[in-house]
Every structure is written in C-alpha cells, then in structure tokens.
Picture 1 (spheres, rainbow, N blue to C red):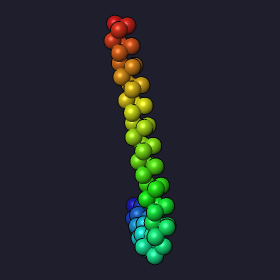
Picture 2: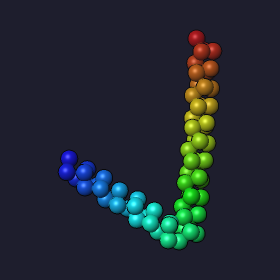
Picture 3: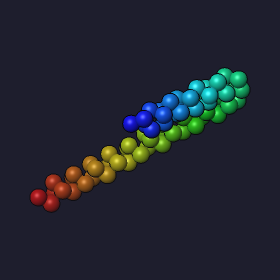
Length: 65
C-alpha cells in the first residue's frame, strides 16, 4: 500500500514539473497540448471502432437466432 502511495506522489510531482516547464517555455506547452489533443482524438476513434464492431456483432447474433 505504501508503494502505491509513493508512486502516486511521484506521478503528481512529475505532472507539476511538466506544468512548470510548459509555463516557462510556451512552445513546450503548445507541444504538450498538441499531444493531448491527438491522444483524445485517438481515443474517440478507438471508441467509435469498438462501438461499430459491437453493433455489427449484435446485429449478426440477432439475425442468426
């Protein structure tokens, strides 16, 4: 349990350090924002693909019965 607590504080420290670097160097902040937008876009695309596959699987399953 202590290891998880230490890991959480470590990741919190890393997040604050990345934020301070972004504040000092605007181009870094822009790059970090671009990475976050691309990550969000990729997550949305993945969710749509999984939803479509699930929908097609359900339609197929219903049509077989």
